[in-house]
Length: 173
Image (cartoon, rainbow, N blue to C red; front, side, top):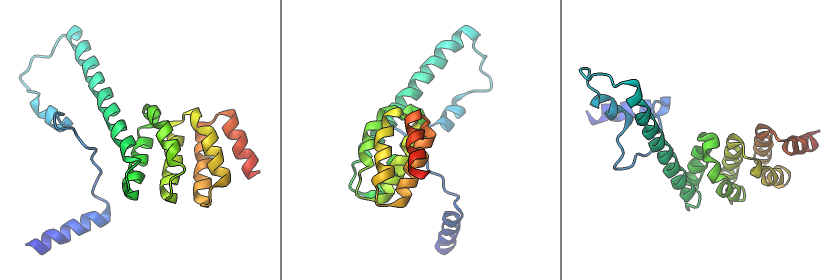
């Protein structure tokens, strides 16, 4: 029985069936649990009562994002390379909402591991903050890893400010 379970687990892992689930605070209720709380018999609330509920949900979502950003920023300084890579990647996946993480990501552009530098450059491009233009130009011109150079150029293209685009044109024309 154990062999069968192990085989199923390995097949699922190799086929990419596992999906990353972001961490949930102990006091937070997962979204699927909230769906189970709703009863079919409940009377729908009036429209005026819906507005405060939406704003409180929005605040909690913003608060959750803020907490996640702070955890990922904290993990950018972890000694484990894989943790730093994943932290930078998740910050980029949050997009412009992670603007508060631009400075730590800029620091990660000088990480000792090339993959952390690549991921930080890609994430800065996804966030799109113009504060990252100068450090990305520096990485594009001076990094020893050519893929970091290309990723920085792509990030500058995504940011799209005139200075960023001029630097990319100057480097590759």
